[in-house]
Image 1: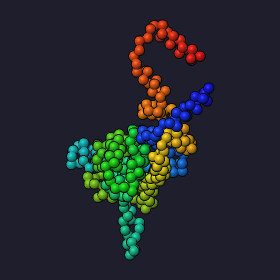
Image 2 (image 1 turned 135 degrees about the vertical axis):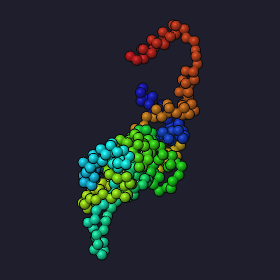
Image 3 (image 1 turned 90 degrees about the vertical axis):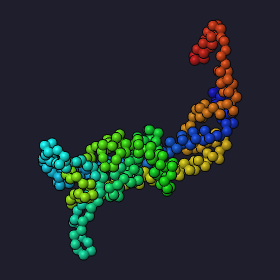
Length: 332
């Protein structure tokens, strides 16, 4: 009996024509599976993110050592005491999360000592190429690092990867702005504007520095080995962006083919068969049940039940008792 019912349902299913709503449901269901499959690309992305956390710990511990070597803790405390006593004229201590580190252990072609320096920003949106200004690369790191949190807010943290070969456009700008707002991006030079995830991320990386000018004019001395350690940390951030791009590229290629196939299918049964071949279980009844067009046009039985349910028929007390009795018997 059950097999007969299942066969009848499949027969009804083949009569359901594809439409935009069904195609979108199938596409999103299959795409979600693509994004959660344990592929080499996804594993590389997750590993790169773990590596970032490890390198951040090492690099920041080293930065604290280097910064405090140039700006001793005792001197910082003394200057803060003077500020309390004399006010604004002695307001020369501030917290910062980005620093110019420099070493002079290399020589040029003439054998003369040369300075090697770069800007290292520990903030969530810190530039990955040594510039002190905000850049798209810093934003790419931020959305990759907090990808799951942004997805949970129904945002698109993959927008940079998806639009990698496209120029700025309204679609890209819209999704980027939504992600930046959700992350809590504020003024690059002020921690007071930071909120949410950005504030939480940046908070551990502020260190005390002495001086009133921007960081580009206060290069902090370090050794060559220390400098290279900072570069290794920054490279790890770049690797997260690269691996995010590679992973999303594979998903996009699959989705491009998926769109072509679903667009060509005339019947829902073809889409269900595709999902099954991909090893994805799709609840056929759920797809139809939540699709009013499919129910109304292609399933007379369901349509009849729906119409009957709309009628406010008068039932006698005896009829209600009988209906209840029949319902309870059907459960046994």
